[in-house]
Image (tube, rainbow, N blue to C red; front, side, top):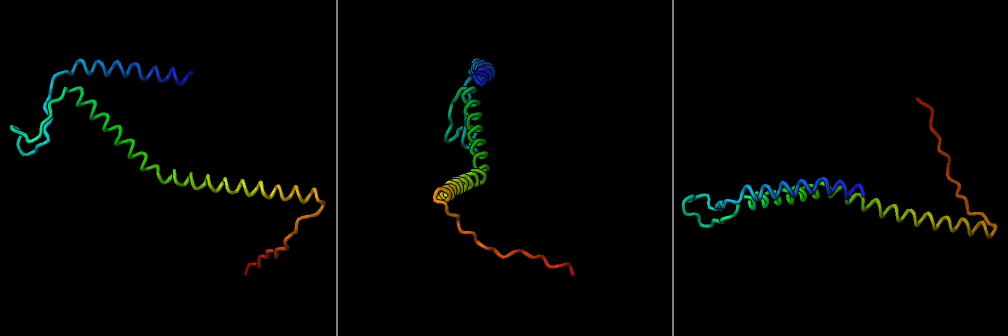
Length: 124
């Protein structure tokens, strides 16, 4: 509910601003892609000024989003790797719990591995 309210509070003024921009900038401009001949360009495109501004803003949002996504790719891959490791460890944990419960039901104890004790030598 709050998310919808915040969205409305942001999108409605933004839509009003975009409509005002389009109405105020209806004149046609020539967009030239020929840097060598300004009078007779090889490729020129007449566009309303508001369409040019909206297209450039959209392109900026897309390029910025792509840059942010590429920057986050190492974190996303790390998160995927850690999630798969966590899934594997959960499965192993459930398997070992099942073995313990089975051993307790049968009345036997699991084998205990005698590991050598760690000794720390005295300082020299």
